[in-house]
Image (cartoon, rainbow, N blue to C red):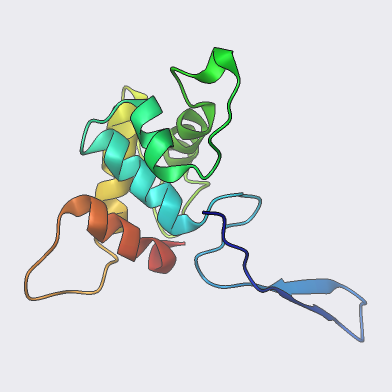
Length: 135
């Protein structure tokens, strides 16, 4: 299922700059929402799912090239962005040895932003809910 978001654009009268106002879960220059990215990181790093299983759960596209059937380059790019501190602005740059460790560290840090609940859900659910606040 593909979801579209509403965006409003405003132009500054003084400098003529254009400003886009989008929901908090929309990340700059990203096709996926912050919640989808955080959930992907949690599924890959904490639930230890294979990249193709994560892609099947998160990606709305069912058609893919034969060369990318066993991997998901977007997921590895997200892991690298978490390492550099460029994906979620409230997270400090994280260090780790592998992409899976980076995904686990990022998902754990993002889950801390979720609103507290009396019965805490699993970390992948917390990462999904904490993503908009961490963006």
